[in-house]
Length: 185
Length: 361
Image (cartoon, rainbow over the protein chains, first blue to last red):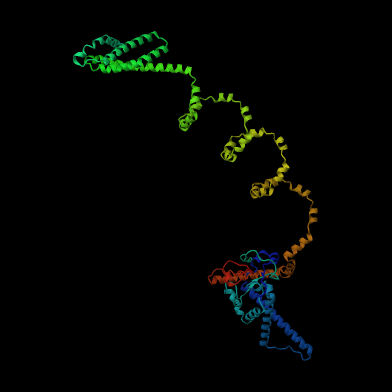
């Protein structure tokens, strides 16, 4: 458990964010943004695996250019590699800054009940659950509190936080306003 | 006059009386005869008195004669009459004589009163009654014996006052002499001013005062010139006075707009030495304070993630909107109220009023 912070509601957000966006900072995010962030993270993991595969293939090419051929790790091994890399990536990201690249892109942050970053253990458990059973994420659709099953079990939350570094600044002095829907056009 | 005539007529019958009683009643004694003689003498004396009264001799002589002669004669006649009544032949005469005696008695009494008044007056002329009273009367004992309260209670003070001519009395009084004899200091020392003042209706007194006339008669310049303003100000507790003033109420009564309308702001601005003001400001310190408060490094760091990319902000905003739409649709499908995800807090606190993250509980 880290020191409590106020994701997305510090003075920075008051200055750099537009008014309608400020009203939702700190609120729990819905299914669309979280799935989108997960997809981005998955793409990141895939890119990472691809990068690793490229590095591996490059290394083989350098060692024996005449006998070079692309290595074939096998589908299962690749899948496990992707899932493992994704789990590690999510764990490190959530335990340190509370946000992955997908979270940053979509303006999300994973926090505990106090608003701070979650610990390494909870980050790993949450990442493993989300990677192995992505379906648990969709409990957000039904939950009145926009919580997935890992959120409920681990007492974590995914909130809107459009600032790059939450947890700094003054204590908020006003209750959050209602969420303002953007224009449909 | 007729009775008098009758009485006088009875006079000649008197010599007959010694004869008749001797036949039917016991004989007259010498005493009866004496009374009868005295009664006849009284009639004669009365007749003489009437004559004398017509002549009007000096009242003193008349009073003396009447007082000295009539009283013993009347007593003697009464005794004589009681003896004469036993004689039947003389009853009628005695009746007449008795009534005549009553009249004589009353007349004698009136005459005695007159004589007494004259005698007393003559005696008082001869005697200094005041000296007698002073020498022989214990006035203190007399005064002690008098119930003055009761006497005063019976006096009609109002009527007495009505009869007194106050103006005339006052005109005769030498006020200056009285005042000179007064020891004002001693009188004032004995006066309970507090009690007297408490009985005064200040409001009524003030209402009767013509303040304008009083003020018009005051030479304010002269009065002020004699006042040591500095000494007064030195004795005034300004802090205490100011603390009792309701500044808010005073300010509330001031028409700020009217005052501002009369103020030439431009003229004031022209007279301001802004350069001097700026020179006195610690601009560097102020800038450092502002940077410290607004976390300028945080803003610069955020610019890459929050401000730099307008496209990313649009993506995030669209994501938020999509979240809301999905939640709204699901809530309608589940026939429940729209969800209020609220800030990231424990589930048991979300149901209530929104609580900000970081707050205890």
